Length: 121
Image (cartoon, rainbow, N blue to C red):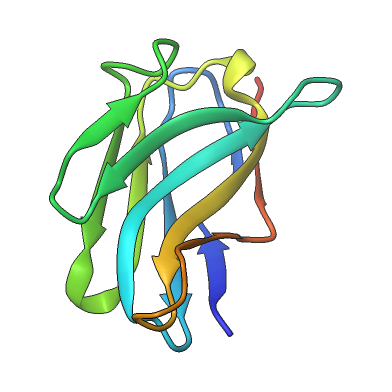
C-alpha cells in the first residue's frame, strides 16, 4: 500500500515562509505526478501546484511567484516552499500522488492526511 506523510505545517505571520514536505512510501512501481492541494473552511479542495517526474510544474494563479514545488525522485519526496504567505493561504494542505503500484495496474490517486497551515498575525 502507498502512504503519503506530510510535515512542515504550522502558524506563520503574514509575509512569512513555510516549507511543506511529503514523503511517499510503499510499493511504488512508477510515479506520474505529485502535487499539493488545499482546502480552506467552507471551500472546495483546490489545486496549489503539481510536478511531474519529468519536472514539469503547474501552479494555481493565486500562488504563482510565491510558492515553489520541487521533488526528489530518488527519495520519492516532494516539497512546497511557500513565501510571502497571506491570510488567504490558510488551509489544510494535502499531498497528492498519481502512481502505479505494478506495471499492469492502472495509475491510482493517493492522498495524504493533510497538514494545517495558518497565516495570521
